[in-house]
Length: 292
Length: 292
Image 1 (cartoon, helix red, strand yellow):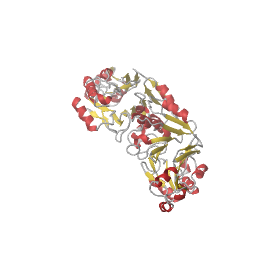
Image 2 (cartoon, helix red, strand yellow):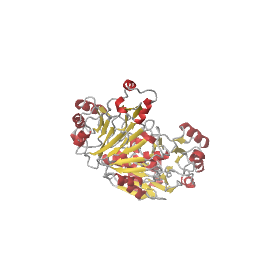
Image 3 (cartoon, one colour):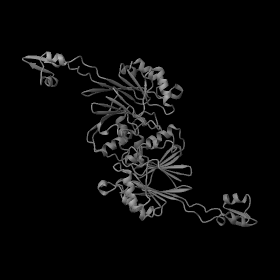
Image 4 (cartoon, one colour):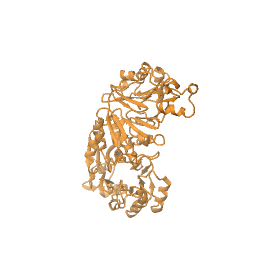
C-alpha cells in the first residue's frame, strides 16, 4: 500500500507545490483523494490514470477539483473503457453537471457520480467511509480501512493434522477439507486474523472533533496544516500545524502527515513547528511516496 | 513587446510541455491567448496575474480553457480589484456560466464575458481582431495589431524652425506650437509614421485560407503544428508542420512559431521537419520568450 502526494499546496500553487491531490495505491487499484489543477501532469511517470478506479472530492473549492476535467479528458484520449466513480459531498452531482457542460467534454467511458456524507463504500478488500468536517462549505473527509486479513497459515500444525499435497490448496480455496470423515477448517490451521491498515484524510477543515474520533489509532492521518498561527488563519476554516498535531496526539495516530501548506511559509518553518508538537510528524512534499 | 509561451502541448501535458497558453506583454498590459490547465503555475516568476487585462479563449476544448478557473481564483485571493475581460467564440457565455457554477467561485472582481467571431476590439495603442478558423467546433484565431506610431522626432529640423526649450514638450503634448504667430505642427517636425507590429495566433485549426489572409506580411505567426503527417492526424481538425510552414510562406510572415505539439514526437523531429519547409521556423518551448 502506498500513498503518493501529487499536490500539497493550499489555495494556489507554488514553484514546488501543486494543488491538492493524494493517490492511494492498493492491490492494483489507485484511489484519488481530491484532484486539484495539474494533477494529471503530476501523475506523469508516477501514477497511471488507467489504474484510477475511484476519485473522492472533499469539497468544491477550486483548488480541490479543477484538475478533474483535464484528467478525465486525458483518460478519454487514452481510450479508457473502464467505468470510473466520482464521490463527493452534497452538491457534487449539480456541480459536476455544470463542470461537464462548461466545454466540449467528449468523455467516452462511463462515469458514476455519488453524493455522500456519512457513507460507507464496501469493497472486497477495503471500505471507505466518509465523514463531515468543518470547512464552511459542504466538505467531507475519508477513512480508508483495509479489511481484516486471514491469519498466517500454520504449516506445521496443518501437517500434524494430516494435511498433505493438494489438500493445502483445497483448504485455502474451500475454507475446509474432509480427511477420512474428519472436517478441518481453515481457521484451525491459521493464526489470529490480522487487522487491516487504516488511513484517514481529513481534508480542509477547522480543528474538528470528528477527525479525532475517526482517526483513533489509525496508521496514518493526512491532515491539513495550512497556517502557523491564528492571525494568519484570519477567520478562515483551516487548521494550524499545532492544532493538527494536537488532534493527531488525541487520536493516537501512528504517523501524522501534514499537507495543504500555505505558500507564505518556508518548509523548515512548518517542519520545526510540527516537530515541537508531534515529534516525527511528516510534512508532505510533492511526489513524496509513503509505503505502509 | 514580448511573447511568452506558458504552455505549448496539444491535448494533454507532457513533462516538458504544459497546456496551451500564450502571454503577450505590451506597454504594461498582459494579454493571454488561451488558458490551459496549469497556466497559473507556469506564470510564477514570469507573468504577474495582476497585469492581465484580457483573456482570449480560442475554443472550448478542455486543453485551451481549463486553467481559467484556477487563475481567476488566484487573482481573487490576491485581492484583485481591476476588472477583467474574457473573450471567446460563440457559446462562451453559456460555457463560462456553467464553469463558474461548478464549485464555490468567490470571485470578487468584475469579469466581462464577450462572445466574438469576426470582431475588432479597439484600444488606444492596439487593436485585436478575431477570425473564424476550421476546427470542428466554434473556434477563433486572433490578430494583434499595434497601431501606427508617430514618426521619429526630427530634432535638427525642429530647431531650425525655431523650437526651443519648453516648446519641445509643448509640441509633443498639444501637437502644435505657435511661434510669433506661425503655427508649427508635430507632423512637420517628425518623420513618416512607423507601422505597428502585427502578431497572429491561429489557434487550433485545419489548414485554413483565412489564416493566410489575416497573417499577410505579419511579424509573427503563432500556428499549431500538432502532427508530422496525415496518418497521425487521423481525421482530426489539426495542421501538420509542413502545412503550417506552407501557410506561413504564402502569407509571407517574418517569423513562424510552431506550437501545440503532440506528445508523440521528439522535439528534434518537429524542428527538422519545420526547417525543411520554412527555414528559420521556431518550435515553441515552454517558458520561451520572444521579443519583438
